[in-house]
Image (cartoon, rainbow, N blue to C red):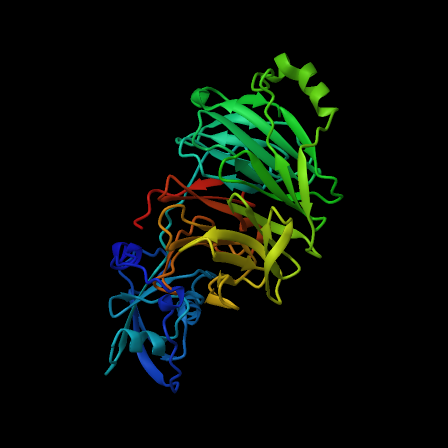
Length: 456
């Protein structure tokens, strides 16, 4: 069951046209069929390995989960998502049974054979020193992971899950973190916070095996916002970065390093110098990009002269830095919460929204070209894979972490590290790729979670 669920299908060349990836949806007359549900998994609360139930061919993945949960409800109050194999084939989340049977040329004469199991629990929790919800994570460096926390501190973690550095200085929750030069030994980081500042940090990553060191920023940038800085993203070279704020603007900053000062030492040795630096609130502002009319919830900077931003105002804007104006705008009625640029090309965007939907846009066409409906709450993060352009990661306040293969709409690997229950205490607030085949997440459970290598 596990191997079949992990199998993402045969590899083949991705079509040149993005629209060729979409599968047609055929309208069919609904009908009632008999289904035999069974499991080969060791589920501790199962009443029996098999049971029969009459279902409609209009049922989707969520409907089947309801059937299985209702079957066990008389014994215990479980309400969990399941994965399903119909006649040995993985049943995607977004299709109806009728569409699935048609696509796979399955003809039912008697019982429909449906195998059920809990999603693969691949996430492992690391010892946590977080003093609040984990609100930001960056996995772009293969040597370490950076997290931002509600307690106002940033933390670096090595590959074995040990905290090696603590970034101290923010007086509000950290909302975003970014490694400006992930391939260099001397790492430069930027953090954004609800305290209305961005802070730059310098550290030597050769010392990652030592006990946690408390470090201070070498520069503090005031965003002049009244309600906090929400997101940051660096340009490809790491020489500049942009920020999005509650105050509706996108700002571009230079990255100046203090070559003569070293603030990576202990607090006792650097306390006086750091306090002097913090009193200066230096600005490296290049320009402000104005046009959004609500919170800028996400920013991306994939190529030197182009920045993308998503907002609660229901728009995604593409900015030309030379003209300092938007060159294209995508509108949608719901507020956007996250944005990632990549996929099959620089014109392909993935965006999550308050309505729980994950959408993929091609800037060359109007409207979304793919919609995903599996999340039941706000999509908190989405991220294209840095090398394999067909894979897309998403996370949500519903507690689910998904990996999508856009060649097969509706088919996913459910990472399932954070418990899926109706409680904000288990919301996933941030997610990223790490080392190319692992997923890292943080949430309101105060944990950094790391998956083992996925079979992509």
